[in-house]
Amino acid sequence: MRAALFAAAAVPFCFAGCAEQLPPPVREPEYDLEYTVSLPDLTPGFEVSPLIYGEFLEHIPGCIYGTIWAELLEDRKFYYAPGEEGLSPWTVFGKVAAAEGGCSGSDLAASLSDGAGISQQVTLREGRLNGSFYAGGEGTLTVKIADREQTFPLEGPFSKYTFSAEIAEGGEHTVSFTHTGGGMLLDSVSLMPSDNFCGMRRDTLDAMKALGGTIYRWPGGNFVSGYCWKDGIGDRDLRPSRRNEAWFADSGDLEEDRRRMAEAYSFYDLIEPNDMGTDEFLAMCGYIGAEPYMAVNTGSGSVEDAADLVEYCNGDAESEYGSLRAENGHALPYSIRYWCVGNEMQGDWQIGHVQIGEYVLRHNAFAEAMKAVDDDIFLTGCGDNASLWSDGMLASCAEHLDLIGEHLYAVNDPEKSNSSHMVSITGNFDLRLKNHRKLLEKYPEASHVRIAFDEYAFGWSAQATMRDALGIAAALNLFIENADIVAMANYSDAVFSASREDAPAALYADEGGCSFSPVGLVLQSYAQYMQKYALTAFIRQTDRDTALDYQATISEDGKTVSLAIVNPSERTIAVRMQDERNTIETSVSIAGDAEEAIGDIGADAAGCTVENAPDTALIRPQSVHILVIRIG
Image (tube, rainbow, N blue to C red; front, side):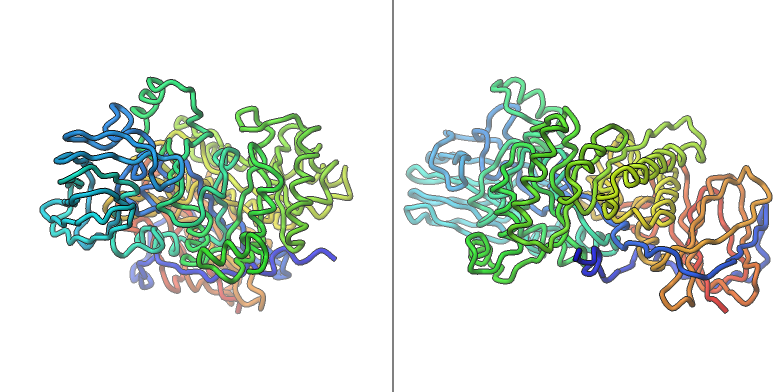
């Protein structure tokens, strides 16, 4: 008997973005058109999976390090020789050399002679910082942050030292390590805000918690096809740095490395320090109240590594890898239910890509090994029903699949109208939904396999705008309408650096804090307000040019209907209930300049208002609304 797919998916929501509560309007509002909403049949449709309100995270430039991860120092384990021109973020003074024998795996150590040191420019906030380093040798080491100094007598062999500093004024500051005395080695330096949670920024985690994403896919993405999870467990200071193989494969040419580094947003865009690994990701999910969705490497990875990861996460403390997890501070199993077997293996851009005839054998071998460790897990396979790839997967892997993954990055054409922009994503989704239904008819043995749209967004050309929010809301409406076959969706990506002008994030972070994009506000509002079951509703549109996109849901007790309305037009539309016994309890509005991302850093409520008990809901131009309706 196949277990219920969503039995453990209930996730508590925390809502903070739409924080402005407005009283009912006291004057007669102005509008261009008036439409009525009818609810002809309150019989619930298919159950809507809560996992469609999910998010995606990948170790990709601007997503993890500097946004979620709290570390302030770059190349803290010395992947490159300190001071290496164009590669190392460290400035050196005196006699400094790279040395073998560091404590962090394959990385180097910094060898400092008398009077020598290294320094780095760092943007700091006001408040307390905690730091540490490993050092061995003779003499003393002085740590200076801004105008604060601390000196440490060295005690011979490699030892870990800790320090702290209070920063009175935020801004650009120099962090330096200076040696006095005989020779010494320095390695695995670290500097973080003292309020970090397991190495992560609390302000970012709090914003992610408010976002309300129900499930997070991690660590990729293309990244996972070159990632070894065993590099990312245990003492973070002792984990090795690796090249991010998906985007920074080793050419053996330092000049090429310098060219690539000059184009990067930060050092950790190309070099993976393995600081945020499996345990940290799962701590993040616990903090924000989200279900973890773990991807395994079927590109360069082995069947054994995938099975070992399942045992590390879900095995008891007496198993080989469960005991290792316990040694790392987590005696109880994490009990992860959702697993992604590989990423986009249909593509020749993917590490380890092979043709479908060979890959189906690989998928089945991975699935069998993972299920042998824990038979209760649910597996998503790599799909692409825009090609023949999903046909092969369903034909050969039906017994080794619960979900099939589809990825979609819609064309982002600024010349298109708002309606056309919406259709560029919903039309593509609709095609894939229809293709999936045809495949289920073709392969009855795969009738249980539902879709996970576990990467989707508008294409990588700009930050998320209100125009994008219209399209994402329409996509969510489509997922709800097709609740019988859509089991999961993960917006790509949950958070990005605000300096990335081409990344369509739900949240943006910089040194000052986090903000919601319009897409983030939409995702948050749907997760908060939409109900458990799909429902049919009608809005009689007397002007087709308004082109409203809408979808209703109904609560389990049948007393509450939530109606999501997307208005891509330039018109303000008044919406009233046809049956006056049904009343609008709450109207949630997300609106702003269609061409711009809205919400300044630190002002996470920008662009979203909540109105209580309006007689008439005003659907503003270029906006997304959710009406919560009490059934009379």
